[in-house]
Length: 206
Image 1 (cartoon, rainbow, N blue to C red):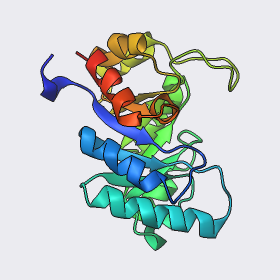
Image 2: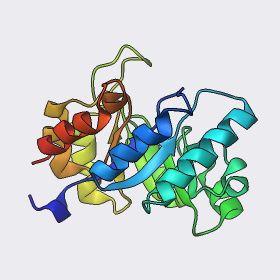
Image 3: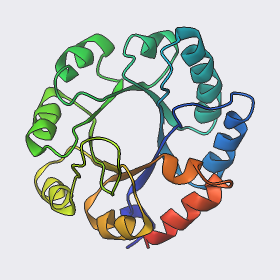
Image 4: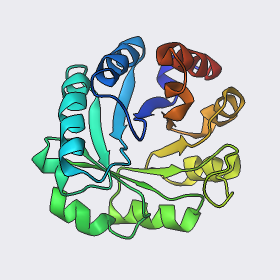
């Protein structure tokens, strides 16, 4: 597989991080590999905290031509100068949000392991559909998005597909031929050297 054929990389921030430390850590990762998109995925519901984080990460990401989307908080996209939004509720609001944010905003949506929800989101105007988790995790209800879903999607649907959730080297090898993006979050941030952890996963793509 040539580098041009390999899935692109998509990063998800940790749910909490130290603003004194994380931007520099993120910069080192973005400098270590070609990253297509970064998702700000904070657990906080404090608007000021989210805005401060978005301002810091936007500076780091945009300096490297990396798009920055925010999870769920549609109304903050334009206010904070972000590139778009990542929705977590499937196709439900895609059409309305596309109308609100306009044609140039990135709108992505997480559709669990549901082919029908993904198709509905694609028809409503999403820029990508994310399926997951693909690996074993005690979080959620235990359902997984299997390789057959990605293989079918890649054959039948033009909208790009993102594989995310509990990714391992073996899963990366298996999914590389049938996904457009890998979204890595805790898979790299839990390591002392996230750039090195990302390099291991990148190598697994072949």
